[in-house]
Amino acid sequence: MAASKLQALWNHPAGPKTSSSLWAPTFKWGISIANIADFSKPPEKISYPQQVAVTCTGLIWSRYSLVITPKNWNLFSVNVAMAGTGIYQLTRKIRQDYFSEVQEAPVEG
Image 1 (tube, rainbow, N blue to C red):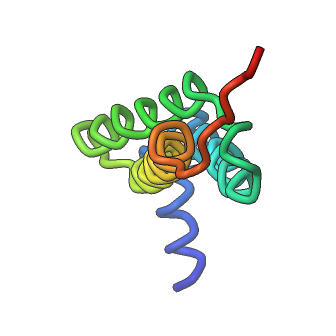
Image 2: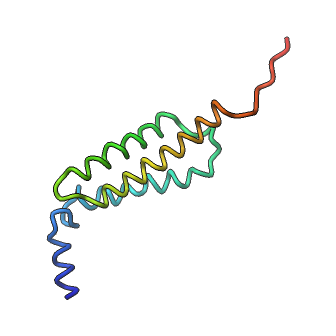
């Protein structure tokens, strides 16, 4: 029974024999994990362009993964994680840049 399930997974159109269907999204998890590791970084170290790219990539490819045949749930889940971590990082950066209570002291001359 287990052998037939493994055979079905192996021969599936989104199975491990296809590079774009399994391995690319699997390695893409590294980006989400790195973004989660950056949650402990101070917000001033966050890059707007990088996080906008991570967020947009996550949103666009999440949608794409649901309209292709067969649906690729690994691709969907990694891109939802990318969009979520990107949105969280952008929120941290925006709060720090625009809603922070700390004001710079005026320079006296």
